[in-house]
Image 1 (tube, helix red, strand yellow):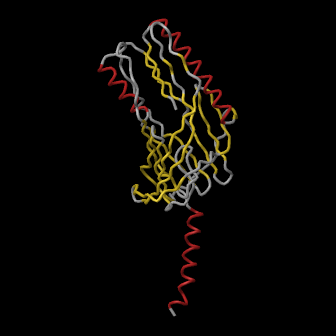
Image 2 (cartoon, one colour):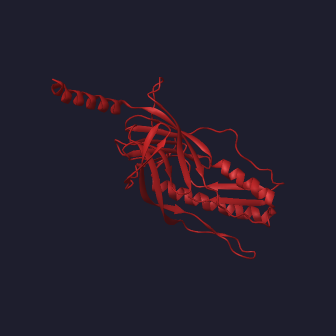
Image 3 (cartoon, one colour):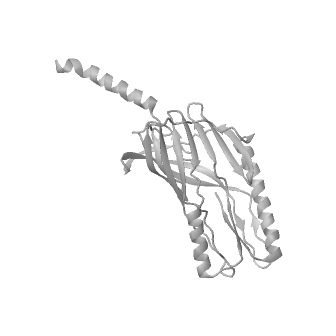
Length: 280
């Protein structure tokens, strides 16, 4: 008699699991950290000032984000931080130039598209394009992140890197054309939350990504609320000039070069400017 009910019980459990997977929704909180590995000119600042600048940079890249997700859609955005890091440097001006940064990133895994509302030097853009399909290699290695069992996945990716070539004497540094560099991505995902989402642009794995690192930046999930009382609202952003990712990259490169030229002109004028450029 027990065997008679065994198969229906398994089928019933399977359909319950499938139903839960289709209805899953939630809010995940992530925190990012970036390695700060730069050299600062000792002729422009003393040891104490260099330590303050490095501390400022580290804090600048420690950010918090929320990922609101349903089965097929997600919204990723930064939690606003009014306490912006700064350093008192005896009249010297510090310019921290960073490449990119998403204001609101919407992803739709069913339609394989993303919409990124991005503010670039005061002008708003709406980047619409197809999701990047990374060739993830699924590993057997596991670890726990909070209460979730996570599996490891790795992928290779080419990314553009902008560098400044420093020259000796009175010659100015020269901004190189962007060069592509291969990096290794390491992600940890949990099948316990069966959605293909993750922080930033990452996703496409058989479970929510709770941690991802590209060797320079690590994004780690610190909190998850599944099926919250207040319904999860995921709506694509709609404000800004519509461009493709390739078009936005061209605009970004042009703006970075313009800013680099303005900085050089200011430095010739008073000599009290120090630029720190973070590529990526």
